[in-house]
Image (tube, rainbow, N blue to C red; front, side, top):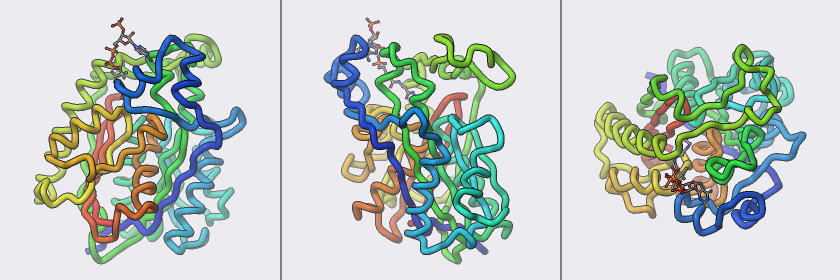
Length: 322
Ligand code: COA
């Protein structure tokens, strides 16, 4: 049986940092409110001319280096993103070409904040089926370009960035178990009201902004993530005591703490980046993985549970051994 395994990771964060104090100058909020309600202290914001493909390319180069692979080794590119450069061509084709990767399967996948988990799970299937030998899998967002900077309910939450992993076949697992889900009944609780076939004329107007009923999103997120964590462990026949680390989606420190409590994990065993990155949507899990690997906390052989939740709602978790 062939499994897939992460061979290297990388991340890219835009140069510009916006602190809570900067936001105090823009909307009626306070550093104290943002820290205590969300855990966010600062976030990176992309430049006006910066794109998801540019950020992914930088993150991918680092991941390729870490995995010891070159462009010619890669035969699949998947990007989870809600803020691609263009509606088409899909952003993975831009990344593939710019990196000099030979023509291959390349597509982007839109599952809001769960985009990377969906992408990782998809690449895992291709590798297990023998249809890919070396996949570049990314989660990336220029989500701040969709933010209304005069709306204090949402503008304090989000940040930009890109995370990349190289996934390769392995005789040992690797990716142990993936658990994906979605339920469109919640579509009105978190959405962006402009698309290609709906409301395109509103792009660039005041109506084009992230719409969110925060407290309702919070409640469903905590409930759903708790349930899928339990289901993922059960499916894999793993007990929560066996977990070495939780690498969660970084939306809100209170959601992360609730998840850790549910899994009986002390916060010392949770990778937390929300204070520095904010909610970077599809980029949050791969960037958190990279942070933990590069600072030496996440080690080869350890058992890690990752999870995410986002607009739709979509949700997913991946249990893996590094
Ligand atoms: N600064 C100061 N006050 C703010 C504020 C801000 N940035 N944003 C909202 N408030 C106010 C509200 O207006 C409200 O005031 P009111 O009581 O006078 O009406 C009060 O704070 C409480 O608002 P509420 O929305 O109930 O707060 P909350 O404790 O639920 O926290 C979120 C708000 C958004 C931080 C929280 O609900 C959350 O994180 N939800 C999940 C969001 C998420 O994860 N989205 C992405 C999914 S991947």
